[in-house]
Image (cartoon, rainbow, N blue to C red; front, side):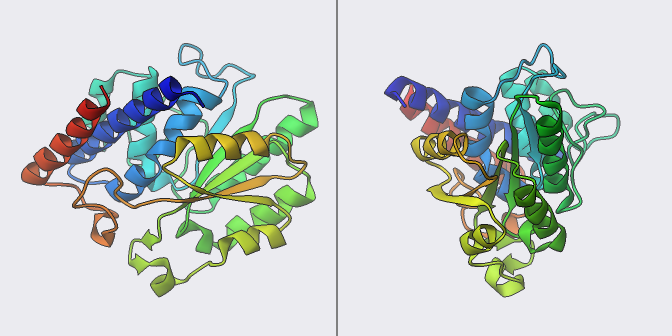
Length: 278
């Protein structure tokens, strides 16, 4: 990855993080921590990797994306807005009556959303179905999904993983956003799925471990997955609340909106980081 591309992605990721904070603050509810942790993954997919067209959201040959950890919808919405699927001003309507930006992704009303998600485990199952369809009909699109490390405590995730490997769904790449925290505490305190890599390997997947905030590592993993004859799980080590100092690695920011004072601090930090890249 050349320096200019990397710089552009870093700037875009910061703009998306600003969008996340703006949306959650306006809604006075939502999930900022896990949205901030997966922002770099979404940035890479939507601004570098995926075959998509905001002007034709449903074009048949587009790559598909499923946010299996659907509560991180603010990250997906901010990404879609930044990519041009709808105006960024809509982010301020998040979770409000009459808004198409619901608390979880809605494929019926939001341009660019390929699957409605929210019930944990169902998103990756839908992604598996999409990948199976592409294989069956000879379509060339790839399917990408993002799961939470708390989400993979769901048994349905592993049923989907087993099926994907048995069907040889090499066109499926799943990121696990491994930030170590979920709604009630650390994943170890709740119901740890570690070792995550060994579990996916045991279910027949290729596994790549990366720093989920390093665009060069994200790119290398995505490229490697294209040449596998198996589904690929990219285990992305991330920081919950990434980019906002007082949110980083704090479990209470899993599902808490910033107040006005906290909002100003968060926006100031993110814009300062963006100014440093100009």
